[in-house]
Image (tube, rainbow, N blue to C red):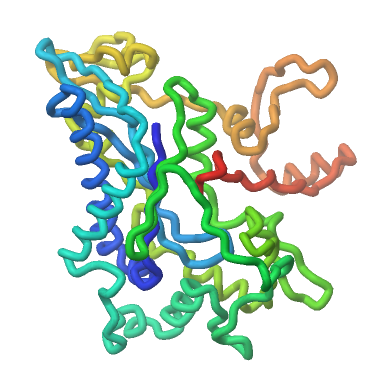
Amino acid sequence: MRQWVLSVPHRLRYRLAYDHRLCRTVLGVFVRALRSAYRRQARRSGFANGETGMVTSVQRFGGSLNLHVHFHTLVLDGVFVRDADGTLHFHPAPTPTDDDVRRVVRRVRRRLAQLGIGEVAGTDGDVDPLADESEALAGLSRGSVLGRAALGGRAGRGPLRIGADPDTPWVDRDVPLHAHDSGFDLHATVHVAAGDRGRLAELCRYLCRPPFAQHRLRKLIDGRIAVALQRPWADGTTHLVFTPMEVLARLVPLVPRPRINLLIYHGVLAPNAPWRRVVVAREEESSVAGSVVAATPPSAATDAMALPDDGCLRIRPRYRSWAELMRRAFDTDVLACPRCGERMILLATIEDPAVIRRILAHLGLSLDTGDPLPERGPPEPGDR
């Protein structure tokens, strides 16, 4: 798996934040550019009619609580090709070069320009559908995109920076597999090797993380809020300081519109893709035409796979127990005996908050829920 991250110019970020149809259009152009790049590379290696798969997380936030709509796309780093006997074989792609990344971002920028979508699109100040719908939300969104306060006496000004050195010279980082073209930014540094399920799960959790972790917020003596950055900026900034109203003003635009999907599948992973059922086959029991058979093991799923004659391979979703979900979410094994460490047998669960409080009070245990887990950081230094 390889992660491709596309950022767009500031003016376009503002438009994508409220126009989900436009957001899907930009994403479609990006996905088609990636698909073409992988298919072209496969043809060079002698594999025609190859298809890859992707899943995109549309993120609306940046590291400073700013409105920053961008796309994190996980790509099956290669293509599936159907052989003459009907089996599917996965052929890994070679590591992309810096020129490959530049070619993709250039293709995205040119195609969007042809569609009338780009940095110069929407420069007419009299045409702003969001302002027509809600002038307040439009003002908050514009301020958040630009990193400036939208309300109060500090309107139009940026937050106070702690640790910043105004004399720090500008430094251009030389990051591999990174390209910039007229405000469009693309990088593809993060890669997960085949079979590394733990690393892949970590990356997926990073893509689906919330805008910020609670432990990053600190209330100062004067009532202002200090927000810790995930990484220090080039000028040494480690924290941004906001008034409580400014924090709320930053959070409002990060909330997406209702009934829109921010996790989108493409290619062979798309819901109606003909090859999806074979590509996502797992080592679990599956029902095929009324009988129970074993699905293709993951180790062989990328080697040789074929659909049944009737094409009716139905995968039963994996069941995750309550205890396993607790372990994944809170890093706590709730079934481990605190005395001997052996596994306990779960007989029943208590879900009524009033009953839970009475039991804890009777046992003399704290009702405090404890501190949240630290925020999941980027899986690699080059990631965003």
